[in-house]
Image (cartoon, rainbow, N blue to C red; front, top):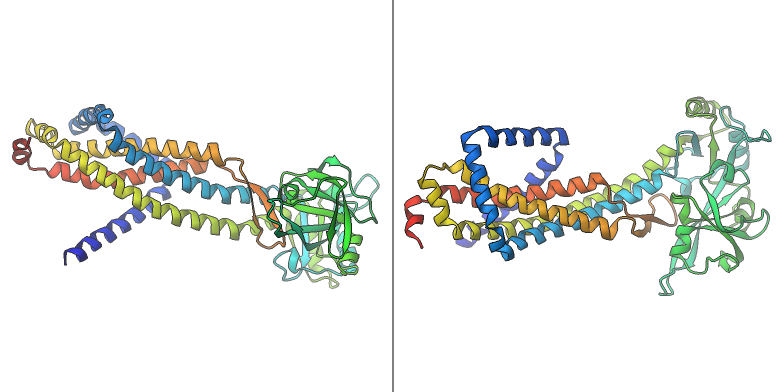
Length: 441
């Protein structure tokens, strides 16, 4: 029976931890700021608030004497925050990389019902009609800035020395691809020559796969290709290989079909007319979206999965950190029982004692949150990673992004853990029988 009661208490505490963290982190910063201001006014103006401040100062002054026990709380919460923030930084970095791949004045056209380029097939007649639609910008020679493109999967040895192969996305592009994407810059070597089995590789792909230095030859499909150069774009294109669309189509036996058509619009305002013209054309059955919306949707699934995993791992670690804080603060209350009882005996009420113990715990939690956030930023911000990009066929390279919003989330988690970890010891301290505590040495 005692074991069952102990299990139920532990399970109830776990539920409180989860509910408390969810409720606290869901509060917007204006609400948190208002609560902080009201609390500060209470401590300055109310008699019980000033008493709480006095007790807090006494407790904080004794922290150096309890350095070992206090470090348990700080280190435990720092670990929770560091892991949580680094996990969420993966999702933020992934989302930012795909988000930078699109804009409001460029559009992508796919076959109707296609969720991504991989599942889309457009015949040559359709790509020709799309390129002549109204709203498309034109270059200096008067040609529409439209690029029918073909995306295929290719296998290359990974750059980790294991000998294993990974999937890379190869994109067949036309001459307008460079005008369409001015952010793509050659940083080493040169562009590929149309009509030849040459390609340029993104810097992300070069980091991920072996043998992609300019001048090297690699085998893709059943043909040998020459790496002509390396490009950098700062977005998802960095993870791709680019070659001439006709040569890529011949190598992979795709004929004259393409998977998508990218276009540059005269302005973002021209998008609605462009989309309406394609929808009204009886020769076409296509789906149209801005590249900004397209790449944002492509990132949603993976970002949500990473966020859920990060929160689940964070909650599990937070439960452990709460128990660590409980043990530490219960021990602190026990060692300070005589001091707390003396304060109660000379007129300090229970509320100031509760607030003082909780403030002490939350101060340690805040320190742990700052340490954990700093570790996550120093170690993981800008750290290169890769994953299989949802809706594509290749490996997507991206950099983890420890943003101010994630650091703020980590601090809120730390304070929530400190609040819960200090609540029960604080209540126990307030309920401590004065006469019993004063008799104990």
